[in-house]
Image 1 (cartoon, rainbow, N blue to C red):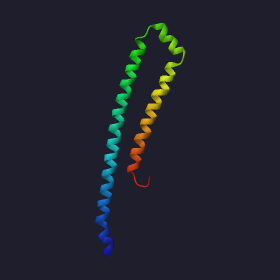
Image 2 (tube, rainbow, N blue to C red):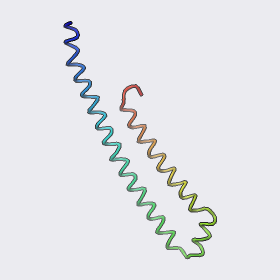
Image 3 (cartoon, rainbow, N blue to C red):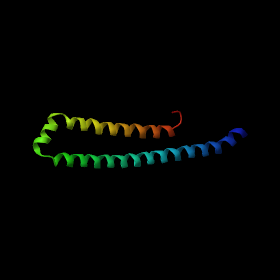
Image 4 (cartoon, rainbow, N blue to C red):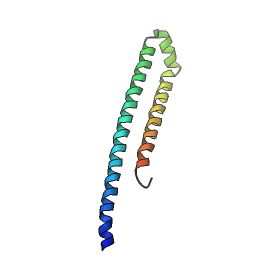
Length: 97
């Protein structure tokens, strides 16, 4: 029984450290993700402004050629890579991963 009584404060400290690490990791992950998404949306805006400022004939030819779909794939790949990197950073903190 004295061994169990000695382990209770240790378990409390370990649990508190784990909870703090999870909260910090979650907060850092959400802040980083939000920052990257703001940057990605800003870059999308720049690309859209550049494409809209083109002459109509060239813009239509690019869209017929699939540039719009290619840009969609590119931005989707950026978002996927960002999400996977942040998910890996978040799951590294959790025990058993």
